[in-house]
Image (cartoon, rainbow, N blue to C red):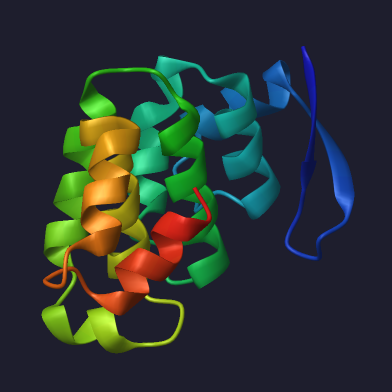
Length: 137
């Protein structure tokens, strides 16, 4: 199959299953368009490499990996996202574009559905950045 995704420069790019399979077997850091392609394919077999991408140096790669993992329907997804969220410090929660806030909002949505989102949004104990992220889910 072919998937149209955005690359590092926000340009639309075509990615094929062959490219994804080749990149999956290589040990190099995956480019953004390959990470996005793996998410578009929604194949569980790509989870190990997407999990690696959560810890890449480039923020864009990490965010694309989060979105890609979020789109794959597998019971392991929540534990992967929780593991990444717990690896981030509490101080990271208060930074602009906080990955921790983003992950907490996703986890709330995945675990509890729309009722948990509503509850968290009105809970005074939930961080404001998490609430902000919840609004856009």
